[in-house]
Length: 210
Image (cartoon, rainbow, N blue to C red):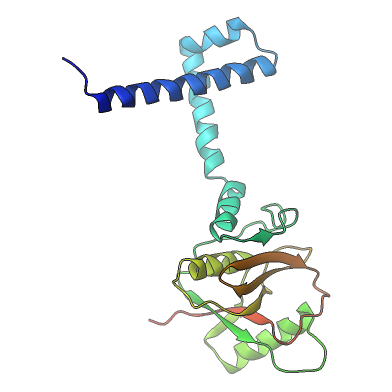
């Protein structure tokens, strides 16, 4: 039976992928001081067990928190973001799919002379929560990343200005996003003592409408 050109192409492509994986794996073994004997052992029952363990590590690595964090930030399409600080290590335990029992919205801070530090914003959010029982509190860094991804995808209205997430989990500061326009999207981190001007928008968790 003659194979079609499409099938031949698929086979060749698959062979190329397999060869590339094999070459990369062989090189990695030699870089670790492995020998030809170590490589040949992979064709034995012992080798299959080793490969099974490696496959598990590869899959778990893809689903690890650092990998998910990096993918979530990349999905926002930032034109610039502080890659040295906005990391999984600095913002542990975030989720990026929004909450099942809460929605997100932003509010502008009340007018005052000067700016607001993080502690002052926390007091204002507490006041909002007391006056409006639908306000659950400040949004986290993960909430902010999810929110901006939805803005990018056209599911939410584009805000104009800074959006701060006071509920961020970093001990070094709070995560700050900048939205000037659709073509300029920035994310950075500022210390909790930084004075945000009154035009800043505070991202909140709110009770989801049924």
